[in-house]
View 1 (cartoon, rainbow, N blue to C red):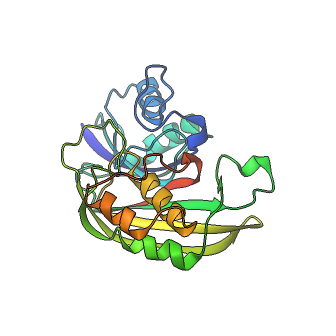
View 2 (cartoon, rainbow, N blue to C red):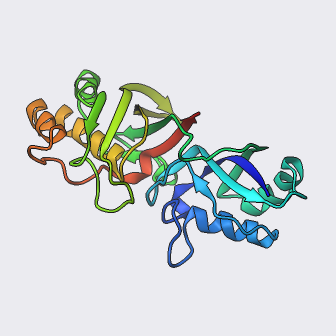
Length: 242
């Protein structure tokens, strides 16, 4: 058997998350069933599991295929069968583990105050936020190593809640005629819905609905103020570092 590394992008609006679902509507379901059509029976490992509605620009996968497959041949047959909602960007033969070998994962979140067209609704979150300075002040509280037990949703297989956030910041830009705030968070790994809970906390602080002290208390697992993640549609798994 040969091990392959695949880089894909996918439209999270068409799936119920990355992981396999009972109704077969997960990204993993689509990829594994497509491989099965080609006679390849392999579990597909991802660098990170995204929730329902969350997108990926550069998700990384690892899987195995029989030796008669090479990267060029497999790309030729696999890419068109995954399209249009999953794009196979790159495929190479590489002996590695997509999840355990990953060193960092970068997420981006797009937020606008005024969505001018319904056709962008699945891809840019719409909601209020305060000043950029306030958003960045709140984001700085999350950098470093923390126990994120109070910044996760129930579920997930991990038993270790400690994670490192290397960098977290926000900036403004225009995307298809919309002024947006873009959040960028880079960490070693993330717990379930952790990124969206962090961004929700920062947005609520920027709107003066919670204080920095309340954020710090939640980071230190003393009291949970933010329990509901920000909407999923603005979130993208942007890059995985190896």
